[in-house]
Image (cartoon, rainbow, N blue to C red; front, side, top):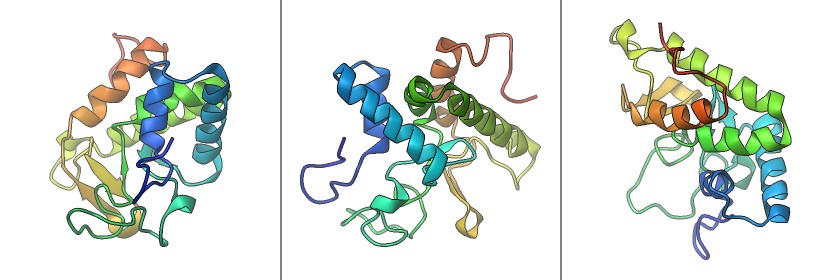
Amino acid sequence: MRAATGTSGQPDVWGTAFAVAHGFLSPTVERRACAALARGCRDADLAWKGQIRQVPPQADVNPGQPWERLIQPAPEASAQNGAYSAMATGWVCDAVYRADPDLAGRLVQQLVNHFREEDFRNGESSGAPWGWAHPRGDYRNERGYLAAMTGPLISFFRNGWMSASEEMTE
């Protein structure tokens, strides 16, 4: 799926995964979408520490710049301009599972490990779940953004990757 029909109409990873997770696509389109999301997570830097980028890096308008135009200027690799977020990880794992169950499980484990390693309760230098993060410049934003944890949890519980008795952080 595309993010827009005109300007900034790059592939929309989050929208595509949402459509798959909620059964909005025909079976044929859904299979292609699931395969593309799995390929992107496996081969194209679409995922980082279990977090997901909105636009595949190879679809950026310019290297490191996913969108043709922003309403408000944002530094490259920052929130909504190339960074990664866990907000869509659950949807992406739902879709990837249909094409590559092992890869989906690895994404779940990567995200859980990231949340544990950078748990906001570990002190001021930590802050996961982050609203947005990127490896370049060790960018992190929106410390303790709990929606980045609760969104994926819905999928994780539904798909049996996590039970109610398990915790993501110790």
